[in-house]
Image (cartoon, rainbow, N blue to C red):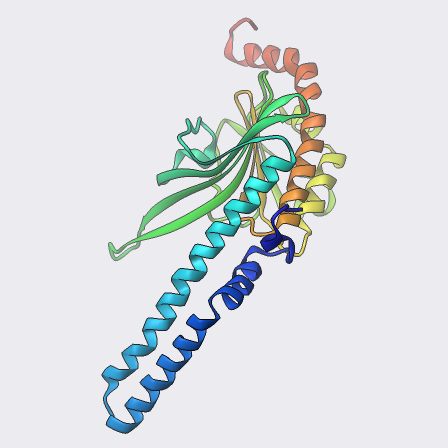
Length: 290
């Protein structure tokens, strides 16, 4: 949990922001109420709708203040998380996003609350990733959609099969096409996830996403917040990305504990299957393994 008293009082950043505003800006709430009451009263007396415009002033001020406090407390939450686990923290970071499917699309990509260190003896980065997707409908009208993900990037240090564990029904996480095969997961997880696998690597994919690993993932996605968690393997990396913002210190710790267990399983497994991955790729590409 956070070291910050402002955050420790609640498990939700948004609730903390509301409580902080009520405590520290009570005078502003009173002024806003008086302005709202005056606007309604003048409208009743003078029948002039222009007075109702005054209602927007306190609403806009309080909305801006609320957004600011959420951002401030979220930054504090991640700073405390980094400090508690011995990681480096940076509010913003320039980053090479690599070739993961999540990072290929969109515009105005940015990274915030960047945390880096070592997890189970492998380099790891935690960060919030924002981007904008522009869409054009059938009438030619363009719209912009803002998306946010919390990302855990594990550098496994060795070749991996290309795999995407994709939350069913996700409109943001793109399907990938790497000569893939679709693998059906057993039981409940098969109803929640699509597993897209580089062709000929179905056995390795089931080793990577073993029942124990899927149980770890299930323990997070079944939390009250219902986070949509996805995983992609490409190059030397395993990327866990969760749709939306994390505003709950308890959820952040649950994600961290899950990531630690995943890294503990995946790091030695990748070393063990490295030879077979290289051999299979060489067999189907006609090249000799390095």
